[in-house]
Image 1 (cartoon, rainbow, N blue to C red):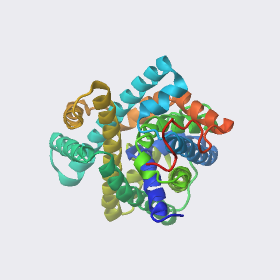
Image 2: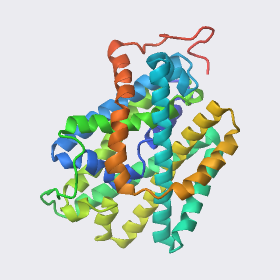
Image 3: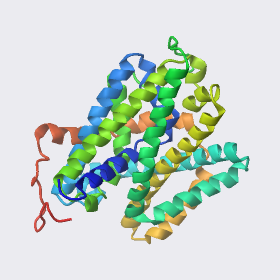
Length: 364
């Protein structure tokens, strides 16, 4: 490997993971809704999801590299056509707006609990911090993700292992209040990957400057998917071993560790803040980039307006969003996921395929 290639691989992997390991993942809500509800099948579902994430990352990043793609339009429209492309674009922007508003609200909730400040002030602080990161554009987002993603992974795995080690395993009993997403773990895993693909694809199409070689994209996607799988397996193991009163709480992981360690509870609250911040920043950046490009308006102006609007709009419930809107966007994103998987199966992402005239794979 050339100098710096390994570093770029992990930068790409961490940025990919940053679009997926958000507050829903770190809190345990996503893991419960999409995997834990299916008992042992949930573990197989996580393995399937990890495989699909690796394939999606491999396909999208390899296509970005070989075809020198620098925007979401260049990736989407040649595969879908104008009408379906516009429909997917609307779904993507709506999803990004929902994620950003809810994550800013989540930041406000956790900050208010930790500091004792009024919720509205904490929401404003969260929106302002998000705006500062968005203003740094893709280079700043990569830097933030390269730092925060490893912290999130280590923190989540550590807390998951602590939960498993500190309490005897109990029989997992599903409460009637906890609703399954689908009838089986296979389709639930596919839906989980589907809605996460909506946002991650937008961000991956902006990562060409970091894809110095073909290996960076391929291995960045594969490693990102693999680390997601391992982290989710540890978290699901911890959640799987607890009674329903912990499983159906607003923030399940925090609800569990609050009974065991106040110090660890505070530490994990910080991890949740980082997770929510990462989700808000990545969603906000992608939305800002799309709106400013389409409407030909100043990037910084769009970022400021979006973050300002997110403050009054941040009233949606956290667990309600995950249980209701996420599966809906999962269904809506199936088309994009199937297109990506189809390209993988057909072998249409080999180096040099679809390369644009006047460009070369080695150029960045």
